[in-house]
Image (cartoon, rainbow, N blue to C red):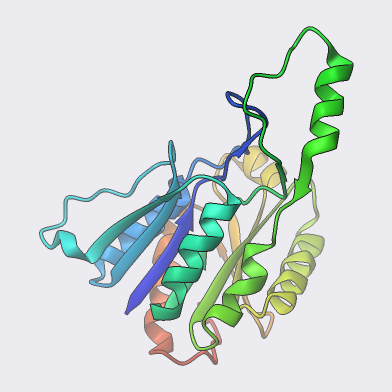
Amino acid sequence: MKILITSGGTKEYIDDVRVLTNISSGALGAKIAESFTWDNHEVHYVYTKGSVLPRNDFKDKTRLFFHVVKDVVSLVHKTAELIPEMDVIIHAMAVSDFGFSPCKEKLKSNSTEDFINSLRDRITVNPKVLSHMRDWNPKAVLISFKFEVGKTNEDLLDIARKSLIANRCDIVVANDKTEMVKEGKHIAYIQDVYKNVIKCDSKENIARQLVRIVNETKGNRTIEISR
């Protein structure tokens, strides 16, 4: 199968030297990409510069393809190009909600008011890339991620399920930063459209479970996950 994985965090330029980004390192996406490649799938890894990259020491290097993007606009162009040919889409990238119209100079930092006014005048709302992925490929298995902070487990799963339905996904992987910091583990909950949930406690476990689930679908989008 052909697997597309987006990973890392987009960067939106505030001026010619500063960017708006997020804390996503791409480590989970890289681990997922490695697991699918080791399982003999063709993996297309869409990432941002500076993100963690999957190992590429496989004997058959033609199974792992790299595609670098910078901001949401370049992400849209690249995913719209690749997704129609994919069997599975795993959208793990943390995408910036906002961008800025171009500013070809460094903003002056000696005036807080001028700096804020410039940002306010140029801020734009980025498109929700996930919401378009199903349109680009109605038949692919679509797996999304939902990251929250300070939610109860019930609220986290409810928010994730609503996102799954709104974006016509097959599976959503949800986690909460507060819980992960408290437990000292990369905890995540894999949820399908039937509200079945698998709890994972490491990046490796998440990756293994996703490979297993995808392999069990055999191209069928009617997915019911099992433990």
